[in-house]
Amino acid sequence: MSNKRIKIQLISAWGCLLMGTGIYLLFRSREHLGFVLLDSVGLTSAVDALRTLTEGITVPEFVRFCLPDALWTSSYILFSDYLNRNERTAIRVLWVSIIPLLGVISELFQFIGMISGTFDPLDLACYTLPLLIYVGFCQRQH
Image (cartoon, rainbow, N blue to C red):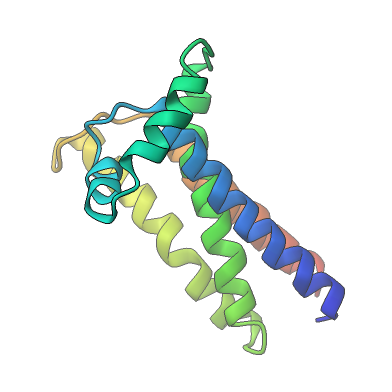
């Protein structure tokens, strides 16, 4: 893997992580776990100041509720692929699949009522699509 590709991969992974977190912090309810974590590290006032700046902005429900999952899943895939870059493709795909598959299982368990939460087919797509793109990319390289 070239140094340029590694840099692009890591910048993309960090970008996805930061964008997903930004959307979550700016546009989701303060009642979620992420805000409890912010309180514990003393960042609440900084995030509240940013939230004040975005109060008049309305974003589509997909962006607010689903897109962070797709961005976080993509970030995990990119980081995991980087960390396992010297492994065989099958091993890389195995490691890369862990978080997306946990997301898929979580959504399916919500659908059948085994765990609390609201099943959303768009969330299911946001966990599945980045993994399918990655697997397709791996297949194309061989």
